[in-house]
Image (cartoon, rainbow, N blue to C red; front, side):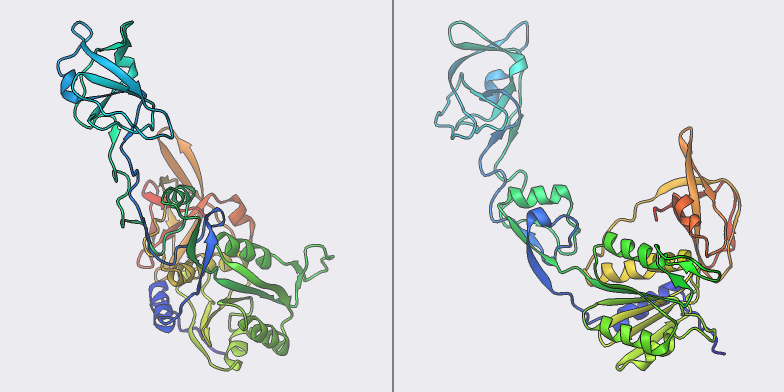
Length: 409
């Protein structure tokens, strides 16, 4: 029987970089309405200044700031009102000292003015003059040309996942289409003589298919396009044929089940039977998920994941997430988590990076993380969990009361 040559997660990631250093995703031009969640394939530069004219940030009166110095409710400054600016139109009025013009929020600042007094600090008098009861400084309540974005400024960077506010930025600089990476394509193959569909009758010794569904949703949430999702019996020729077909139009192929070293575990042999293939990892120092296969076939990443649902999902989170972000140049994404206090001791196997499922509850001003235990085949581990904590491979566990970071699964 073959034995595992276990690699750490860090070593596995380095090997992925080595084997796929030349991998390149194509890009495509999409409408900005369809760009949310996609990844920029090039930097975006503004072709103009934003704003391209001086604008007021308040409803008020454009003034010379020095005309308001010392003004107060008891000793207001008096200015002549010489007109108003309308929204969507240029300011055709020029003001001189002791003159003012009404400007709405977002309206253009007339030439000569260098500040805006909020309307709340003014009172219009019957003789078309204005009492100003508060002073302003130069540029107060004004957005200057290019204050938001300068011409030729890089506003969004390659590798950035576009959010709703980023779409707003694209619209503000006059772009209605943007270049993004094509979605990584992924095929999901679940193996096992015991697996039946969700609508099929379950006989003794059989189980319903879980991994096809969970891994498909995880891939879609990661921004991938699913090219295949199927269940195959533990037969060499059938699995080999599905793998060959999947390689034709996929960047990633996942084979769930058959990755261990038992007599029915044929995934590695099938992968190695396909031309131009190299298995460079078989055994990952991770709990759960040790019997993991990582291979390169042609220019495709092929993964053999454990058949146990929790193990398969953990390895997907660790390896597939990493690869998808790498091939889209997503380098600086912040991994958000909640800081919580551990409710009890958590033991881990030293030498393995451990992913421990937890629930999270708020107690006063802090969060409490409680470990959830169960065997690796129990899918309810994940449905009950609010997230997971990661225990370094060099630690034997974490003590009750220690601060941990809880990540959403």
